[in-house]
Image 1 (cartoon, rainbow, N blue to C red):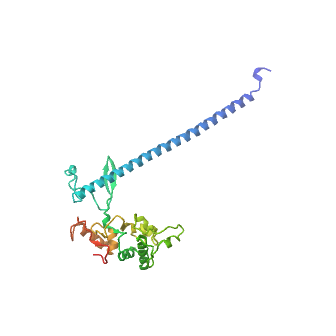
Image 2: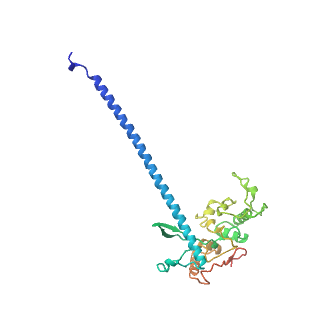
Image 3: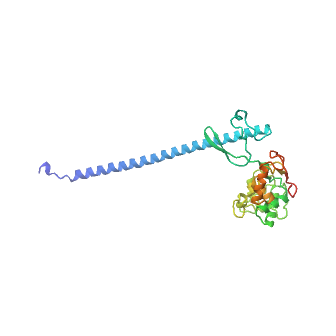
Length: 281
């Protein structure tokens, strides 16, 4: 038997097996490369997101601090439409700060920022409001008479310093009987969100913007007004609507008169709506 006549089946099998091994190696390398590439993309995305969040945080902090600084200057100059000395020629009509509760776009280091300033003296001080006015507000928000009276009593029980339960009120005995028990604070509210711990305050009632409660409690009350009164000259429309029971047309007319300074100086910060008496002046 000559060499050319030897069987070649074993060599072909070995070559096929080697080719199969090479293909598997390429598949593994491709999978590893794809996994590595995906991990790198995730790292790059996470880094970019972190950089964006950091930049946004410090832009927001800078915008807030600049606004505080401008507000202090305006306060010291006793006018809220004053201009910085170096900007007086370029922006003669631009106010230093706008306390209107609306978002205003500004620019810091070439990046846009939005600033909104609200005068808390125009909202109802939840820690000082009287029981009678509190009941009226809760009724005008959309609660029935009995519901408003019960909620007013519960709020007063929450903020007073004793454990005595008012008529239809709620103290620690009620809250300790809840699935997640807690005690009544029996002190002034430090944050308005505490209202959601008071019996009768639901998510819809607090946040509003629903069919039953178009105006939420968070748009009416504040813990930052230290006076037992509010300044109707800076009150936002929801507060005016609930306090005085104004319709859309009456509310628009009232705001127009207020903006033009009719009936007094629009720049005055003197509170003109006492919280201790009813009816409202």
